[in-house]
Image 1 (cartoon, rainbow, N blue to C red):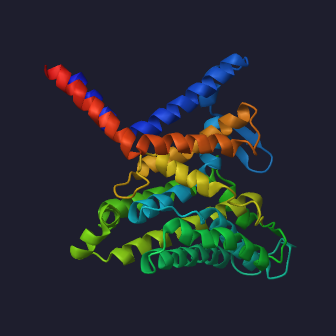
Image 2 (cartoon, rainbow, N blue to C red):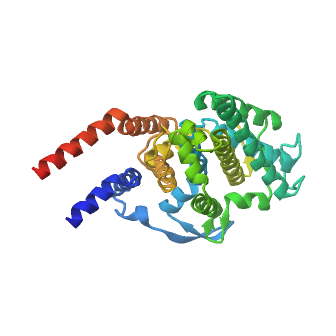
Length: 360
């Protein structure tokens, strides 16, 4: 009886889908390694290696996934709140990343300068300005969605199209290089650990504490479930949705700083490219309903790193960077189909029939 109850709890857990997906990805890597003559468990191997520029650093596929998936994980934090509050997605986050990175690098290098070793303004000024630019973009999206009642995908399509172009204008259509060690820190290493992993872990912890210790998480979920009922209950639904979009923009700004620091430059055409898809997929894969309401932050984080693991696996299997989005799109279709009302109703009826047969 206890085992049966445990199985039922596991089936109902929102983390079931992302954990199963992660296990499937790991199994694929193990099978691929075994087939190519590599040690079957090399996917999990983590070693310390000597680097010419960063000293002794952690090395391994899992470390690479955690490092490269940091930007997607940051975007997934904001996307989770937006999806929950507005029952819509912010498709502009990749372009906003690019704009924030361009704005930060433009300030650090100086307007019109394409490459520099010396900072034109203090590092903290450029970083904060880049993050504030993300907040501004989020506030603009929130204004359209919350105040003007424009459908989220349509509202965020504006910055999806324009933000990257604005970044190019700020940089005079150039790739702005900031070859300064202090700026490169955000995309480098802190001791043996990649800095992006630490930055992402810090913001995951901060947001988790805020959602747990304040009523913000409950407010966002309440508005997402029924905004009219929440308004009648005394909640400012429009303000809550607006705040969710501002936070989403802020996390896009942080991700943009990490991405530009990683390459010590602002490459407006490539920073954040297709990452909006990874963020949306991470939320869906994390067991969160794209129709809004209750959310699971842990599931979104697992989903984000699972997406990066899928990307890494696809490259290992010989899939090109141009073909990888096709496979991700197929995964999105499968996940959305699983979450669709007809499929859920079918599963619910099957469970009821099994329960009835068990009683009989």
